[in-house]
Length: 74
Image 1 (tube, rainbow, N blue to C red):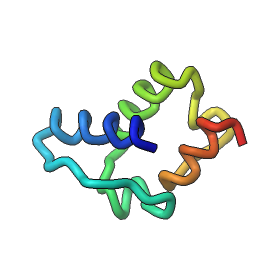
Image 2 (tube, rainbow, N blue to C red):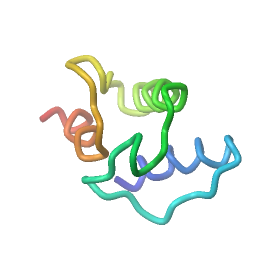
Image 3 (tube, helix red, strand yellow):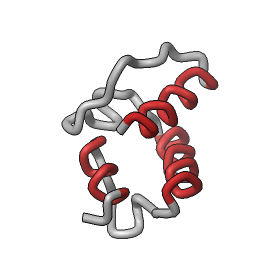
Image 4 (tube, rainbow, N blue to C red):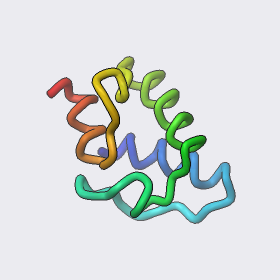
């Protein structure tokens, strides 16, 4: 989850937002992290480049935990 936190914080810093200290499995991408559709698209690209997995291939993900499950292939 540490690398995922780095990816999220890189995106936040590039968009002028404050970095966050940690990620929790229950964090909702839109509600808790305030990601809009553009940020979600960027997150998808970065995760695919880093982990070689399309997190949205099998449907929409809404939480950090769902992303981690897709990365781990669960």
